[in-house]
Amino acid sequence: MAAPTNDRATNRYIHREVGEKPVKYKILLLCGPPGLGKTTLAHVAAKHCGYRVVEINASDDRSSSTIEAKILDVVQMNSVMADSKPNCLVIDEIDGALGDGKGAVEVILKMVSTERKADNRKGNVAKVDESGQISSKKGHKTASLSRPVICICNDLYAPALRPLRQVAK
Image (tube, rainbow, N blue to C red; front, side):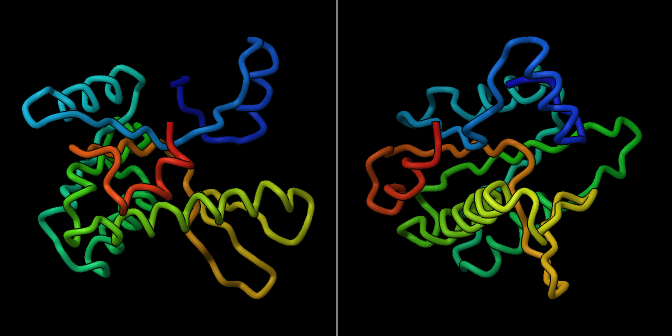
């Protein structure tokens, strides 16, 4: 993970000058048996890279709408703390949500697809405002994924995680 900045143009400039490629994957999927230290690793890595960790345990709330509301709150939340660090979302037990994990996975996939559509339309009507949301010409705003998300699971090959494996690293 590179040091976070707020401006996409600045990020492109930094990557070009340093010789790094821009980040292709914003979702990290950690998997392994219980008790291995996956959650601790996620917290340490995010803090080391300069992010404030916001953790959601997907198995605590079984309803899709509750999980979606929590994820969108974290992704859209601007920093109100004095340190002004950007957020890194950690979703623990993503394979246990809803029994099949689809609630949190669907929300993340929607945000990734929204971001990819915006990148494809670069010069068109869609614009990204300072809160990281994409606004269209009709005035509707859709949440996009502008910060890293670390998803933690026990079973990488759970059927509900199949679409997430395609967009995560």
